[in-house]
Image (cartoon, rainbow over all chains, first blue to last red; front, side):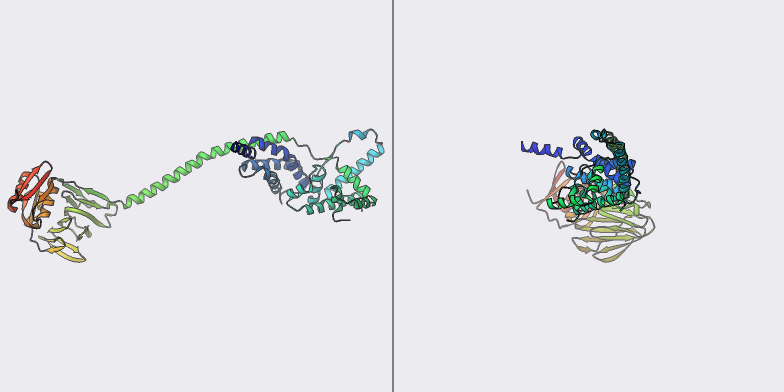
Length: 176
Length: 303
């Protein structure tokens, strides 16, 4: 009984199992995609990075445990364009705020659009590591600890980036 | 306010006092607005299921590639193994000696690469390396053989007892357990025994019986008697005579109450067993009983 239980667990823990692999893909591919996009602003390259990172994960599925898989794909994706790709402009979309739209005056909408433009410009003006950290936290809801893991730095360093990012966004937008 | 307080604020890690103080500040409203706007941001669309399909397709493509590679690699492994075996066997065969041997009651003639001839007497063996024959005319002998050596470089016969070196001649070497005899019929033969070389001109022989060098007489014939299907002895201990009889006739010899050291002079036929038995027993005053492949020699006085 114990033996079969252990065996089952092993299969579950094997990245070479299609189910385990697919689950890992669904859990992490979007973040890998966004992560590379925030860094370089290139959708196509971000998509390629996902493909490459997960193809490599499959090749090494017997060597990488599921717990290490997330860090593994981030590392592959991160190293892929290291010192190769030049950062482009990051273009982000804004979700429609359905419930408030009706109450907004045209002036408010105009002002809001103006603000968004400024924010876009400010985001693109940030250093790459600050922008990536800020967007991973705000858009993907990643905790500082996870971003630290992806970037291979301490949590404190991520907090610093977060702090500086927000500070310079305000300075940029308000023209200080 | 603590270090990186903006990050702490977003993570709800500020103390109540700090938060209150921060809310009081002028910047708070604009930070709040930036965060509100940022939280409605979206990244580009990402079709996860399609991406997963694409990765899996790539995976199978990659796997089939691996399958194609394998036979080629295996083919290379086989080629490498064959080459190693070929090289190995080439060197092995190069060092391999060719050998010829005879059983009891059997003679054989061997022609060497330089057309020298060796005739093997019964129960004898020679070996030599045909690949190195041009450089090194060296034959290893066990038993007895007659050599007709073609003129050329030094020709050596190695035996357990000693070596025989010649240039071009005819000679007989008998190398049996405890018995070593070299007879030169033509030319000059050098025999090295116990590190000492003895020159044998034509018509002389060199004999060692049980470790003693024995002066022997000149052969009368131009070839050893065994080439004429006879075995000739001159003052040879009986045990070597009987051993030779056993070899020539393939008959197991047993003895009873016989002095094997007694010297024997005479000749016996190598083909006619009855005649040979008579030839040995009569002059030695022995009796014998022949029983198929066995013969028992015993002294006349014994019943």
